[in-house]
Amino acid sequence: MTDDAPLRVGVIGVGSMGAHHARVYAGSSAVDLVGVADDDWDRAKEIAEKHGTRALNRGTLLQAVDAVSVVVPTQFHASVVREALEADTHVLVEKPFVDDIATGRELISLADRKDLRLQVGHIERFNPAVRALGDVLPEMNVLAVDARRLGPPIDRDTADGVVEDLMIHDLDILLSLFDAEVDETFAAGIRSDPYVTATLRLDNGVLGTLTASRITHQKVRELAVTGRDCRVTVDYLTQSVKIHRHSLPGYVESNGDVRYRSESVVERPQVKNGEPLRGEIASFVSAVNEGTAPEVTGQDGLRVIELIREISEALDGPEAPVAKSGGR
Image 1 (tube, rainbow, N blue to C red):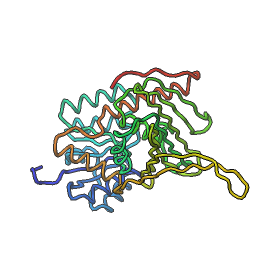
Image 2 (image 1 turned 120 degrees about the horizontal axis):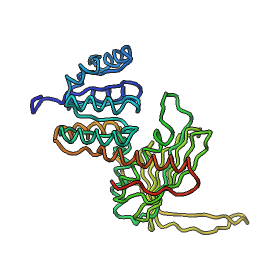
Image 3 (image 1 turned 180 degrees about the horizontal axis):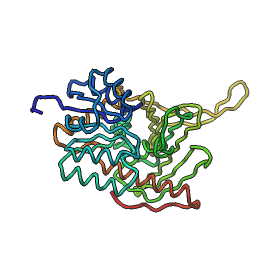
Image 4 (image 1 turned 90 degrees about the vertical axis):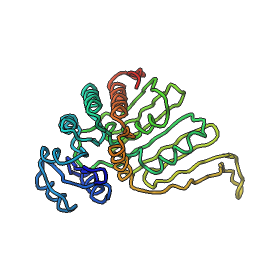
């Protein structure tokens, strides 16, 4: 690759999400989508034909590219990421990073030794509404964060539980918003159904409450940050932000009836909408081209996995907090 040549990229695993990686790469002038690979050869050929590239076996693809997206089932992340790194290829791996923390540390060490970029695909970091929240947050004295990621039963195959598949997004956002560690973790769930609520106490005093569900017949993707002077709400789906200030609760009389009413000033910061995946991939390509650290590092990915383990322990054990597992 010459300095002015586009980055040569590929996608390993072109199922539901991997096909979107291929689409975004194919539409970018900053990269050359060299090929895609999948254990399902017919699927690989279908996606390759759709995006004007080639279906290749994994080994051939890794020899032909500079960087690759790994979008295979979680249990195969470690082996495929290791194979890519050993082939001197930069890697963007979908979340969850790995299913074993020790293995994740080995992969991070391997990438560091080879001076390769290893980015984890926590896509909500690149949601324009979350970016806008990051601009507001420094002005707030934050007390609590509430997140709800709810929806009906999924129509795709996954071995990941509701915490690994859904709540993981909001855990990553919570950790990324504050320079703080988790002191205590509480969790409760409906054991026969995928519905979990976790409460986290950060060492900076912020309380986080997160709920994830696959049995709720309404799709909800919301985050709310409560401060002493305002409350900020984020809708991931509409990519909108609202700031509620100066609430004035009171009772009013109407036609002989007394009713409660609360009025507040609502600000709506301008949010430049865009596809988060495009932002994520652009960030990865930039990190590779410029030789800088990815915005979402392997260590960030591991930190979330450690927290997921603590939530799982709290769900399986008695109703008691689980102490933090360690620093970053």
